[in-house]
Image (cartoon, rainbow, N blue to C red; front, side, top):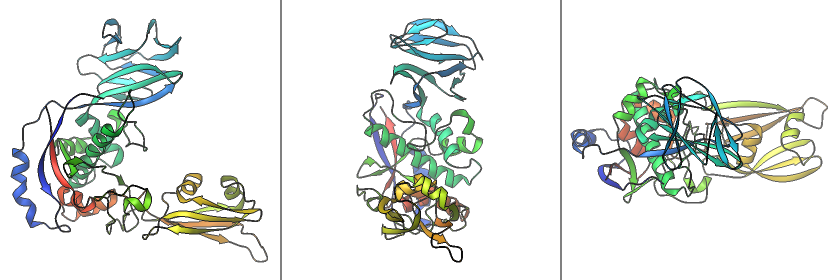
Length: 388
């Protein structure tokens, strides 16, 4: 894990739902909090255990071995393939136990299929090569905000996303026991796609909230977020097992989101193929649900058996947007078995923490990012970290 201590200074505490007047006095305070310190570097796994990783640099790049010795130079804009070789990493004519690719003059590094800021660490791992991007936390967020939200959305929504994503990254970094990297780059973590998803909007949002995080009792929180809840977010313990006091169910403001309501249809054959083990499916009935309608378990009845399936397993098998759904069999006249199934649902994602479409609508209606954050993260405190 990267070195450095995090010191936290309070900016604002959560108060009652979406009050406006109280925040004005804090605007000057935010500007006066301790000057920026050296920023944290995150280790982001871009490819893990791959048989081949495409590597390049927009400028000439120094190649170093695991001891930091200069072993060569990568020419600008030339593509190479890093591969495992006898427990080491091979890149063109260079072979080493591990390698660093360090672009010069502010250049970008190419990993797989896109450009990234920072430098890259190549290590033999899981019988392949793992490529880890070492990137400044704030520059990492330039990309994450654009991957998780549209960079043209209202600034206050983008700023709320920046603070949530920064908090989430630092929380997961502390929690992660992996010796090689701090975070992954997909939706299991939070989406990071390099320079491709940066934009003027994401630069302003990240720079305008520099070093700001959400805390509870002096600790950075697990700032979960999702696209749209379908009208009401969830208590975290109703979705997972661990209760967290700041992840409370609240009414959402996502009613005009394109994913607020949705419908999917499946033929009998498609459904049987995706949910095997019960024969021709006759019905799918929720057995347990959360107070706000997310399916925890569902009974699948077929002509060859019955089984109870986790709601999350159903969404994965069918590619649904959320676990808030109902299943309606469609029968033809004279048919005993349904010929198709219509699934109607609400929202997109796990419905815990900040709703991105809710943040969008609140921002459009004049609420600032502090108000948005402290609404979706109940009882949290907006604070600033200081690396020393």
